[in-house]
Image 1 (cartoon, helix red, strand yellow):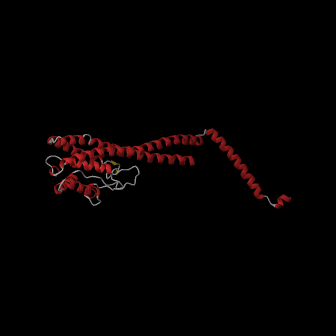
Image 2 (cartoon, rainbow, N blue to C red):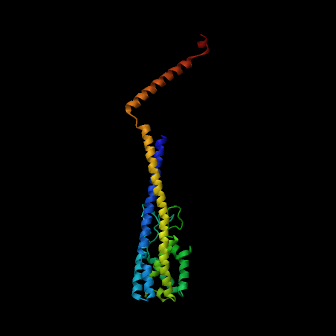
Length: 274
C-alpha cells in the first residue's frame, strides 16, 4: 500500500511539473514573438531620423505599429482558461488592443510643450498606479504569485510596448513630429527599444532556468518511478501457484494458532493440579 501511494504521489508530481512546463513553453513562445516582431525597427528608425528621410521614417513608423499590435496580441496568450501574462488576474485578458494606447499617447503629444515634457508625462502614464497604462490599457494584475509566471506589466515588456507605441506615432504627419526635440526623442526611443529587446532576452533566459529545473526534476522523477515500479512489481507480481502454496501454509499455521489459543483459554489452576 505504501509503494502504491508513493507511485500515485509521484504521478501527481509529474503532472504538476508537466503543467508548469507547458505553461512556460507557451510563455517563451509568446516572448519570442514579441522579440522577433520588433527586430530591425530600431536600426531602421535611427537611420531614417539621422538622415532626415521622411519616407523611411514613415515606413519604420508603420512597422512599429504592426509590431505593437503583434506584441499585444501575443501577450494575450492563454493556457486553458488561464491568461498567462495577466498576473494573478488569470481570468482577465491583458489587452483589448493597441488603439486606446495609441490614442492616449497621441493626446499626450498634442498637450506636451516639448519632447522633454512629453516623456515626463509618459513616465507618469506608464508608471503611476493612477496612470493610463494601469487604468485603461493593462487589464491584468501587477502581482504574480506563480514563481514561474511573468505578467505584461514586467519592466522589460512595458518598456517594449512604450517604445513601439512612440515610434508608431512618429511619422511626419503625427503630433510627435511637431514637438521641439523631435529628432532627439526618436533617436533615444530607438535606442531604448534596442535595450528593451535585450531585457526581454534576459527575461527569457531567467525563464529558461526554471525550464531546466523542471526538466531535471522530471528526469529525477522518471528514475525514481523506474525504481519504485520495479519494487512494487516484486511485491505484487507473484506466481499464482507459489502464492497459493504460501497462502495454504499461512492458513495451516493460523489454524494451529487458533487451536492452541482455544486450549489455553480452557486451562485453569484445577486442570493443572489435576
